[in-house]
Amino acid sequence: MVNKNLLISIFILIAGITVYYFFFYSNDEKAIQKRFDFLAENFSKESDESQLVMIKRLATIERIFTKNVHFEIENRAMAGEYSSREITRRAGGVRSQFTHLTLKFYDVNIDLSHGQTAIVMATARITGVKKNGEQVAETRELEFGLQKTDGDWFIAAVKAVEVLEK
Image (tube, rainbow, N blue to C red; front, side, top):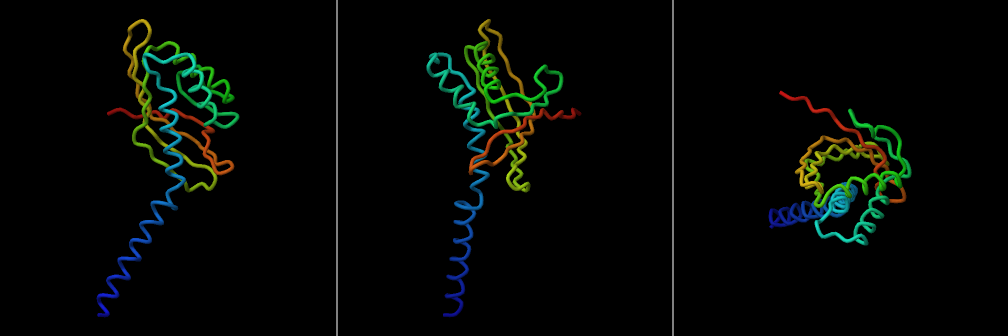
């Protein structure tokens, strides 16, 4: 009888810990992952995308960045500080060069040990077809700095990480 009650107690304890982890503990990780899914979805472009959809997507992209974002991308003219509005304008410029464009994030690793900031390492892959028919496929390792403001996570910094080749 005592063993049965002990087994039931252990089961309830494990179930409680599991529920806590999935519904409360990892909320920040889930929120950050959703930010990256949201960015990928709204940066991507379908072949039949209308102007109205394009404007809506670009407007939503602006809302996931802090007011000013620091970029460090080697061998690019894009290093420096940019406003979220400038990022949106540049994203629109990139998207306008393509008939079809897809952004995906892989291997997203979230470090929440910095309090109200987070460091996210991710592999970003852009594929698409330019208006001139050229196929594009580029993969980069990126490090993102995020800040938590009023309960939401915003991208504050983007840095390209150089990957050593064998």
